[in-house]
Every structure is written in structure tokens, then in C-alpha cells.
Length: 138
Image (cartoon, rainbow, N blue to C red; front, top):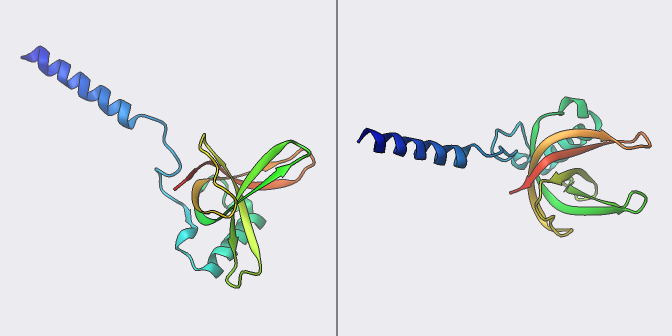
């Protein structure tokens, strides 16, 4: 009986580790900046702040929704993807790039919700960009 109990406990432990011990994603943890709960004016303002004062947001988990957009840069032969947010009057737009982990990117114009870790990077020409790393579509 003791041998069966030991084997059963080992199997339960392995199942628990296999099911819960995998890599943690951005969507699994707490969201530091949830733009999905804000009014259109507040969302646009917050994204404006994120783009202009990125050091205040680095390392935070950000959740946002908007329109999917992509841009192919011929010079570096790479496609960039962003979530675009319109202001309340739909005259201005701000966006944040995102990088998915192995998922297929949505079509341009598709409404999306994305969550990821806010980071910045600099290109070879010295231009700084904001991005959501390890992002997931919800």
C-alpha cells in the first residue's frame, strides 16, 4: 500500500510540474498598465506618455487594444507590427510595436488586444523605439 501511495504522489507531482511549471507568459501575470479600461482620450494620452517618457514604463506589463498594423522596412528587410490607438476624435493615432512569441500576426486593420512587457530598443542609426516584448494576443 505504501508503494502505491508513493507512486501516486510521484505521478501527481509530475503532472503538477508539467501543467504549471511551463514558461510563464505576459498574459498570465499581473498587468501594470491596463489601457483597455480607459476612455479613448485617456488611452491616447497614456500612449503618448509611454512614447515620450518610456523610462517610466520599462519592464511593466502593458495591455492594450486597437487596430493591428504592419510596416515592412525595405532597408533592413524586416516587418514591424503595432497596435494603433486613435484619439477620441479619430484625427490622431499613436501606436506601440509588439513582438509575438511564435504566434501568427493578425491582418492589418483587425481589432486586437495585446499584452506584453514594455521595452525600448535603439536602431543602428540611433533612433529609439518602444515595443511590447514577449507579447500575446488575447
